[in-house]
Length: 128
Image (cartoon, rainbow, N blue to C red; front, side, top):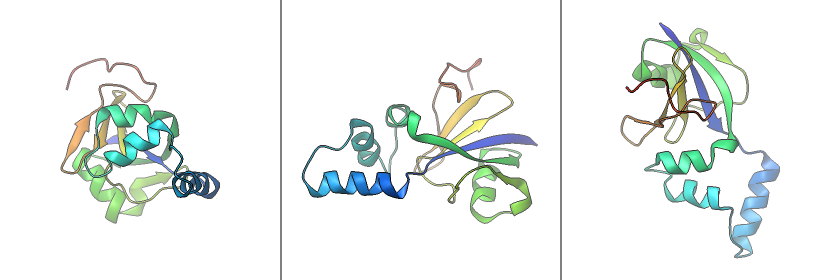
């Protein structure tokens, strides 16, 4: 078993209102948000890197592998989840970091994509 860090974008209500107001007024949304929104159902490592400053640690999950992390993050068991912030179910675009190796992946529309970085935005120590 390993410990995985779950990172998610959890915008505050105020920030969501600001973005909605920009959209309503026909003004340009921030570039990171445009890229993130454009790839919502098919994320890319580039879009996630651009939005990296908006990702926050939501929880730590103890699991055997990424598939089990996804399962636990969506249906439990709850005792494998240590919540440290607001957390929604694990979904497309969320980031999973193997804390033992500092290797990060993102949840893709099918499976997982490697980010090629750690939670500190460095290149991983080894190739997967």
